[in-house]
Length: 421
Length: 159
Image 1 (cartoon, chains in turn yellow, green):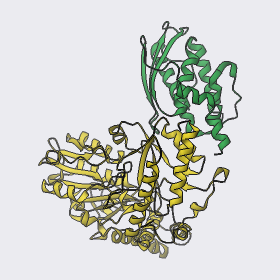
Image 2 (cartoon, helix red, strand yellow):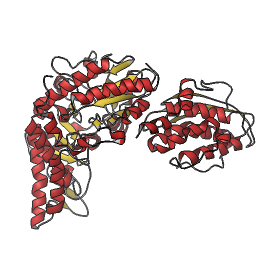
Image 3 (cartoon, rainbow over the protein chains, first blue to last red):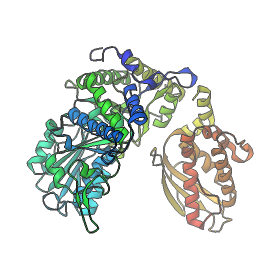
Image 4 (cartoon, rainbow over the protein chains, first blue to last red):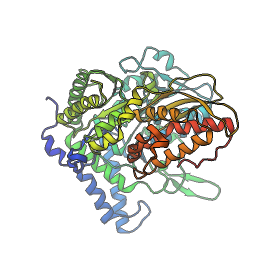
């Protein structure tokens, strides 16, 4: 199979959990990486080492280990900036997850004065394939400011319907927020094209890259976006840390998000002044050891090469789509092929006639196969395709063709179990 | 989870009710209609209750529903409606309490087959904490609808 990472069995040894066996002696087949990725030993070791040897608060501890901890934390910011091709390390803000990054933008826009302010008569544009975390913050912004929320619809094959783009993006549009890669459909959206159109009408562009950063090279400048957010735990890093990259000019114009320590320049009882970016947006003690883990995670991915990770994902996803197509009564929601340019992410949601997704995942789990069942925090996209929920298999750089075979066999077994074949 | 456990979860009785649910569909007359959702998985039920009166000795003349969800939640709705139709409200509440005890007993509660009838098939579900809420969704909907007709019910609270 073309595109697979070389020496996959050796690479898999980097991830201790992948050697686990579950009930009845079934080996773990982990196909839930769009939910959270597994962690390589180097990430685990770096976090343990930091806690064992360098633990101290950052930026305010004047002792030697305080300096070590601060250096490790800020070094992680450098690594992330390099990984994203960010023009400046100061544009990399650590959050607790991708949701917080999106909420940071939506909230500070609600409070912004002047050019960035959002109010009645203004419009906010999202899409019907968004994760709830890229819907609800914008609904709140619309409610708080009187602005109108609008959205791109979807085509039958799971792409954005751009036929009314001239109507949707107009002089009233203040912000456009969209996912780069759908967590449910696997669709890869034309971010650059939409960003360019949005900028022509003077709108800000926010990109939810939670599913994009793990599986393809992401260059924030080339994306054309003003903000790009993702989360650490989907890129082989830990939970508890996310990243919001923003263009310096916009970040400097926005008011602070949370108030507290770290984000101030000086505080008096009457009023305070604020730190420069990125610390202006990082109130309180940050996720220090999580940042250290994230820094090592992006280095790990860079050493493998994100082009190679992407090629691997495309190969496995194509193989999985072929396998799923062989199962009678199974319908894939979203693009059914990877496409020549590789325009498909690794999340594959599907339904099987007559068997509820929870029951599918329960039977797969009895064979050691971990998938996700439910609405995947994308209820509107499910509604668009006339289903209440789906089963989702999602691969990553450690997924093997044999694991896809196990999934296909497991699904045939599931159909037999519920007497659907 | 072992295959043996899988069979204890998916009892034949449960699969039968899933494929051929009893009392399904929304019917007239009814005094209360509720819509309950399990937000973690998206299971939904719209449920109507028709009582013979509005005092707490009223007989449950009908429970009708439109439900979408997994085999466990669908079968539980079918079994629940079949159990409570024809009973008085206090009798149905007592059954609800027995069912709840069994579901929260992590598989350690011996159910009373005489009382719970096909409901005992859900004893295996109690061993799967993630699925317990599937089996309880329609019971909670029934209790909610009934209390809207006759006021607060003297049943212990859900966890």
